[in-house]
Length: 149
Length: 67
Image (cartoon, rainbow over all chains, first blue to last red; front, side, top):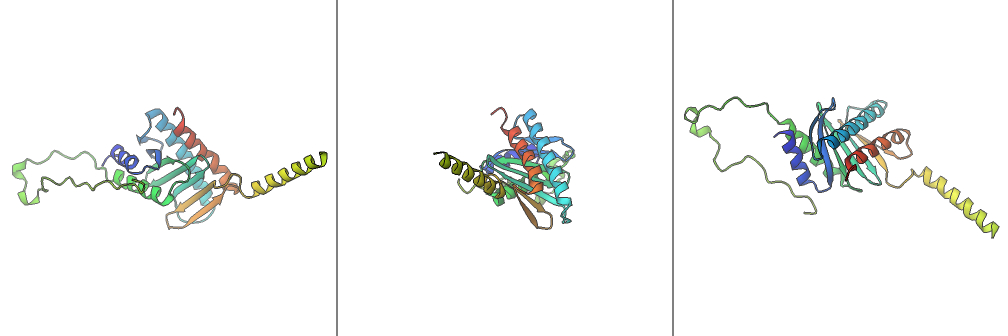
């Protein structure tokens, strides 16, 4: 799944999330639920938060920092990192932290499953019929409904 | 009358100190979650949280700008 589709799934599935961005750790915006300009600003601010949190975490002597969750009076901020990517989301006040984190990790995992462009398919005649997937299967799971759905 | 005003001001100042020591606005908090499954929660009065909370507010402001 590409980054845009993974993020679209995220914002459809998680009603607590007001908006989210997927970006590389160098700041490159991969996908955003905002317009591009606002998405870049959100990604930049989230990256700055993650770097500052990294510096704070370094003093604790623990394992690598994977997630930052900030509860503010005006809402929640979530930043989850995996490999060279991060997903950041803004929620309303009093979010269900575990649920939002689960959805963000799922989004990152789906985005990481993005494959490079496939080589041209072999012709149907050369493929073994036994290996062909059933015509009706889409390979997609039904989207999970939120708790308040 | 003047005595009541002084007591009100003193009570307000004491309340402000208690509120500040309790971590500012209720509920503001930073959680750092590590890859080994451990986590640290920093109240708003924590030195590191005081650094991180404004950055988180910047994220919210950027997300909600123009809405």
